[in-house]
Length: 251
Image 1 (tube, rainbow, N blue to C red):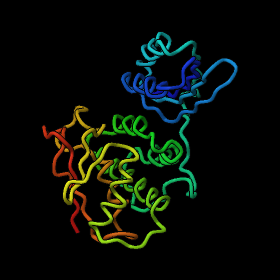
Image 2 (image 1 turned 30 degrees about the horizontal axis):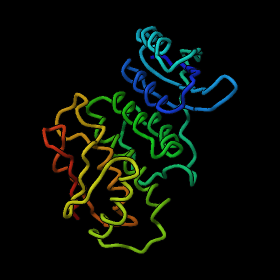
Image 3 (image 1 turned 30 degrees about the vertical axis):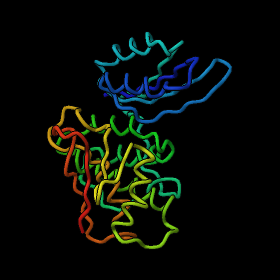
Image 4 (image 1 turned 180 degrees about the horizontal axis):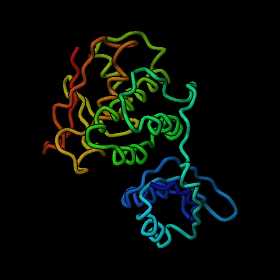
């Protein structure tokens, strides 16, 4: 694996990160962090990516010929010491540790990702889908649920902590629904939450796959600030042929 930092210059800001992030992921790389700014040259997007060395030339060709890219340059850190953000100290600006991190080979990468999610929230799906691609199948569900729980607990503390304690049904309506609508389309149907456009579906997995959303809902509504013993169950998933992804809550 190799880490590469790309500095891209473009005339257009709108849609730039999404388009180039998709290019990075399509070539087998993970987007570790990004920064966008404007200067006299135009819009400058800096991306630190990680992926297989053999896939680097195709990625560079795709970036160099992309219609949104006017010019780009690449710099490579020392291959023997890849650049990875150290796990940050907990601050009010990043999701706090509220659950035990599963035993994962990529735990350092996950911890380094959380401050980035806080900075970019609600635009979080490019790095999340890159993480999903990086994880092995047996790590995918626990890792994404863990990240979701951390993000959900952080969003609760940021947006909802000053309210009074709500019963589960009211918490779903007044906390989970508006919080989820910050990142995806969502609607309440009886006691269940429905998501018609989950970005985690149809990505080569089998079975239900919205693990991050399950974890986030658990972080929003579960203990210590919510319902003890809460279980979030994905009862329907577009990845299994359903028309919509649906989540139910049981205590």
